[in-house]
Length: 255
Image 1: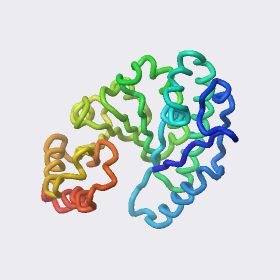
Image 2 (image 1 turned 90 degrees about the horizontal axis):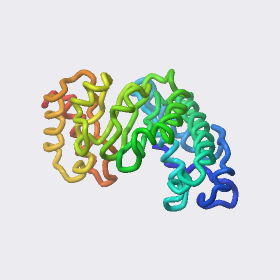
Image 3 (image 1 turned 45 degrees about the vertical axis):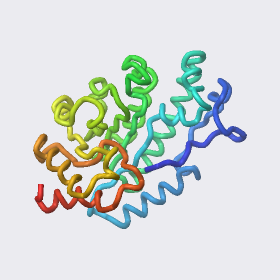
Image 4 (image 1 turned 90 degrees about the vertical axis):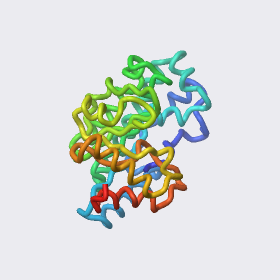
């Protein structure tokens, strides 16, 4: 996962004004803000070779912009000077597209594009079509030839139906806590779905209980068009034995 912050112009610690948004600049792939992550990708690729695929998480342009802004400033900007914000979003999307392309060139099989605002809790689908979709697609376009790009739709009350034409190989969402179910999402999308494990309980269940979640998922969907994963990131204190229980259940046929 790439958690390195998008660099702000010199002297800024957060975006607070319209002029601050205008100061954002496109970031090159060789910028020092991404250098360590790209080095890590090269090391991973060199270590695992053809044994497995790996992908790199990229947070959507909207999520990236929101993190740069002070408090709720991005929503204020959306209302008061939308054209300025849209222009800044384009700059961010271009930069993330450049980074995504570099990650694939270093060995990643694709990206895990995480959307945080494609939810009725934050925007309507019509609003997201303006503030999210064009910029998401710009990032995905940069890695369209990568073998395995994943869309993660974060949150509850998600805009699942309006994102089905995103050019990705698989879709992931917190299906234990929002609709659609994993089976319904598989039917609607016609794509591989990723899920089965409830990320909110993964740290507290026993390994046998984790195996039971795997078994229920396979009973519901079968073994095609499915990658067994959590619906979102698991807590950092999740025991390693619980993570290994997923792989063991699948490899051993105990489910």
